[in-house]
Picture 1 (cartoon, rainbow, N blue to C red):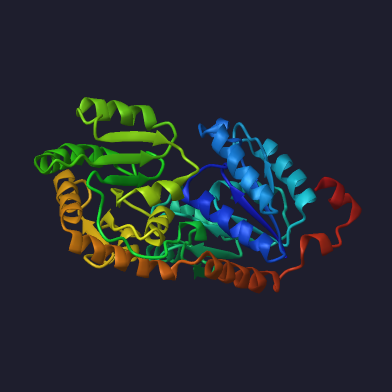
Picture 2: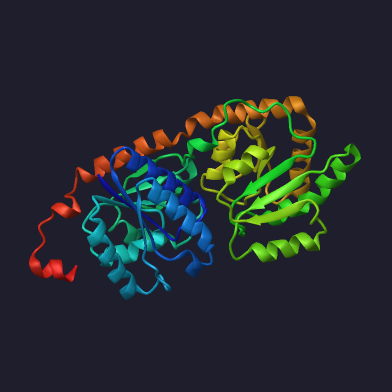
Length: 381
């Protein structure tokens, strides 16, 4: 099968990580896998070196990559022409878009193959009425969580399939952790944004420092992610006087190594889809402290694999951290529970589910490269 996945750009987000892992798995199973990005990383404010590293990993896995290099993704004419050219070279049997922004130009490019859409969040980044147009392009929708499924079913009229996110096997730990380090590392992974609410984590840092200092312990909070909000986040850290306990690393391609060194993962988000960073943490046997919001609560079972806390509550976040870091018995219990929960999220099973869906959809259609297109239409395409 010839599978074409579409992203906004090559970067370190959850959708991009999933596409990379899935595409590599597809290629390893003998399928032709390609990944198209709408824009170069630099065109949308993402690090060019991360893009280069991601594309190189995909190439090594046998996956073709292209960037349409759209400076303005709303330029329908430029986007349509770029898509037509790319699709003529890729000749896919199925297109799986992981960004709704690709759908208008996909429609005008007359792809003539089934299109699947995954929206990777429990909140919409477009007006709900857009589903009226999506339904004319999309054959199936994929939901990454129960909340995402309910949201899509509410607005869309095409079938919705739930396929849970998954992470790379390189995160998989062999055993649970016994206790946190004396000077623990608290990890938060995700591009700084309003959604991630790192401001609450920064405010929690002072409370955490105050609680840990009498014990002679020096925790470090590492926020991993790049993008336009990084400098304002660093300014907030300076403003709250916690530069000694909080650092922003920028985008990193070695998150698996960072998780092996960390003691706890924190997710302070105001809303989520089904965060891959939390799956990676679970596979790494990290206890997880997360806000009690849709997406997170589907991943974390309170007091079993982690602790759920109210959003926008820095004191509650600090108390949860202190509780986990100061109680070795609780820490080990949550690590065991976190590692056990990870068994639901293998990339192999996720790939099986996607390939089954693709076969179902393509059985209802004719592959791109087998279609008989009249000469005039072929020239126009």
